[in-house]
Image 1 (cartoon, rainbow, N blue to C red):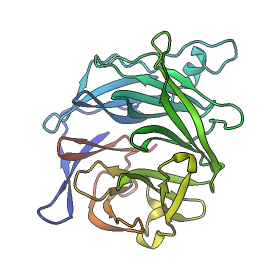
Image 2 (cartoon, rainbow, N blue to C red):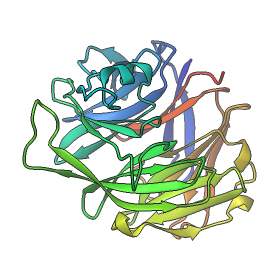
Image 3 (cartoon, rainbow, N blue to C red):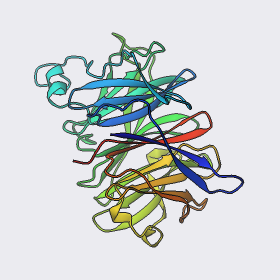
Image 4 (cartoon, rainbow, N blue to C red):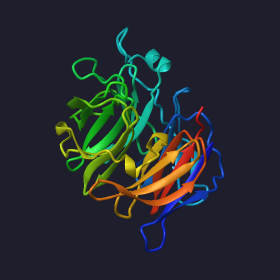
Length: 331
């Protein structure tokens, strides 16, 4: 169910190795999302089971046992009640749990961000030093710039640390950016945040396998269109209200197995250019690509056959070492 690999530079070259790590403890089945999160100087991996609506927290280390289940007070089922029929009600969350989980830091404070597509609801949970979560700041739009139906979300820092949330709908191509800012006060322990739509647009539908990275301090992202085959690298403008700019397009000749790829991830890296990992679940083909500075292609740095049929591929870094967790099994 879970396999860990270390990704390291090799010697004085820009090649890397992908080495299996023996895990002392098997992670339980049922997790649907993972996100690395840092609280103070310590790194953790938050795991969420959408079927059970339960969360676990693992302490990350760069030596055996690498992942250690610890006691936490994370509660992603905590949600304020709304009026009858309001999508913020407790029973709605029980019937329709969160589908996406990610994290971001704002004002030196860590947050867990959740999302579900059925009503476009975002939940912003502050994570305290004692590893407890606050009641969430809840956010959704039902009109004008509706948040319903996103199949991908991402938390992005831009313009010297200003926080944004991106969402994309695979089925119809809707894409949006929302700014997240701190307000003067809030009540009942809810984080003092406000989210505002700053950009709403339509791309082609069927984009998937998003992987976000920084280059020269700016935000870029890799993606694959599986409907009308295309492989792109786009630039998110420093002010996300101005949208995105396509930098590299029709890059399929450099990625001949693009339609077979099931997972992509950017390796958290302290060695220069961004490194992209691609994974094909059916055969375990795992490749690390160094993205060129002009974003018009990449160079292969490593290729191995790792585990097969993993459903989630989770990159994170501890100290100077990068790791990739392969988890689960495709049904």
